[in-house]
Length: 389
Ligand SMILES: O=C(O)c1ccccc1NCC(=O)[C@H](O)[C@H](O)COP(=O)(O)O
Image 1 (tube, rainbow, N blue to C red):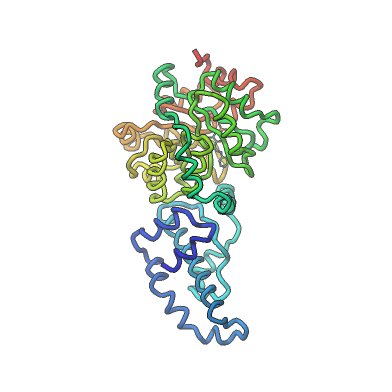
Image 2 (image 1 turned 90 degrees about the horizontal axis):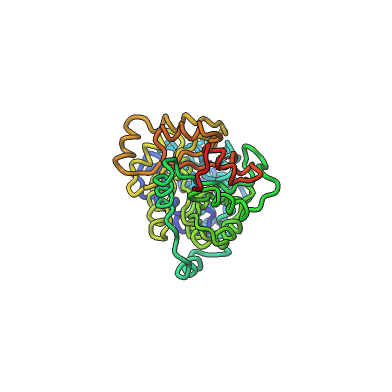
C-alpha cells in the first residue's frame, strides 16, 4: 500500500491507479508485490559497492517510494496490455537509479519516448492534468458542481434527430486542427461555427478541448455553452483521470468521450458510473473488435462510438464501422439498445448512407463540415439534403 501513498502526489493520481490493484493478480503483480522488500535487501553487495549511493534513512525511504511508484506504473501498463491496450501510460520516471528488478523487464520498458501519436497525447495529458489538478483540486470542483446548471439529454437528442429525419443524428465537431490534418480552418470562431451547425440541423455538438494537438480549449466549450444554443455538448478530450470528467461538467459538457484504446475496463466502469452520477452521457469509443468485446462486457453503456480512424496510424477506413457491427456484436448492441455513433472520415451522403446501412443511428463529423465556408451548408452537403427542417 506504500505505493498508493506515493501515487497521491504523482501525475498518475487517477482512478486508473487504484483499480489496477483490484485486478486479479497476474505473474507480474505477484512478483512485484511479494518480492520487492526481499529484492531490496537481497542485494546489499551491489548497494555497498557503490560508495556514495548508500543513502541515509530518509533518502533510502524516498528511493524506495520512487522504486515502488515506478513499479506501480509498470504494473498498470501490464494490466492494460493484458486487455490488449497498446497505449502505455507515461512512466513516472525512468527506472530508479538503484532499481534491481529483472534486467529483461527493465530493458523491455526502457522506452522513455511515446511510440505513436495517441501515446504522445496521453503522456502529455498526464502532465497537463496533474498540473491542472494542483490548481483546482477535486474538492473545489465538487463545490462548483453543486451549483452547476442541469445537463441536457445528449442521447435523447440523438434519438429524437434520428426519428425526426430518418437519418443518423449528427454530432457536429467544432475542430480547428488535428494531428493528422493540421489546421482545418484558419478563421476559427467556435461560437459562430457552433451556431451554424445548430442552424444546419446538428443534434449535438462535439467540442475539442485539447490545446496542444487540436488547438481546442475548455474556454471554447464554456463559450459555446454560454451562447444560448440548444444542442447538447460532447467534451472531446483524452480522459485518463476522473478529475477531467468533473472539470468537463463544470465547463458545460453534457457528455464526455472515453477511449477504450487508452482506458482499462475497470477505469471505464468507474468513469461511466461517475458520468451517470454527474448527469453526463459517456460516449465510449472503440476502434477494433477486441475493444468492442471489452466495452460490450461493461454494464450501463448507452452510447458506443466506432472510430474509423486508427488513432495510432491515422489510417481511415469507413468499412471499420460495418466490420464491427457484423454478427454477434451487432446482435448484442441491438439487445442492449445501445446507440452506435459512426466516427471519422465521413464526407458524402454515400458515406453517411453506408454507415447507416451498417447500423449506426448517429454520426460524428468534423473535417468535412468545419472546412466549409458555411459549416451549416456543409451539413446539407454531407447528408445530401437539408436536415434542419
Ligand atoms: O483527427 C485526428 O487526426 C486524430 C488524431 C489522433 C487522435 C484523435 C484524432 N481525431 C479525433 C477524431 O476521432 C475525430 O476528430 C472525429 O471522429 C471527427 O473525425 P473527422 O470527421 O474525420 O474530422
